[in-house]
Length: 116
Image (cartoon, rainbow, N blue to C red):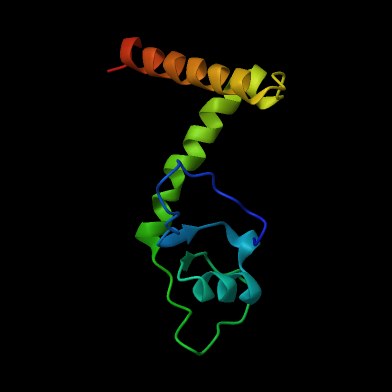
């Protein structure tokens, strides 16, 4: 996680996120301790076979975790476009253009579908 770099526009300092929602695959004490050390509240559900820590960190906010579904659905919609899912476009500029087209197509489909 130390290798993640978020590009920022010039002149504005990077502000770390207040919380991070992830799936059960990231439910490790090492990951959660790293997040807390950097001032980020983890929103990660515990695995069923994982013991709860008795230091007050076992509280899980389901409402904050449910908002994660917005990002998951958006990624799922983008992957419906085969060109994006298989990463046909190698240049970042072209991939971004295809992602924008896919989102426009999705918005038009939702706006003009005959579902009510």
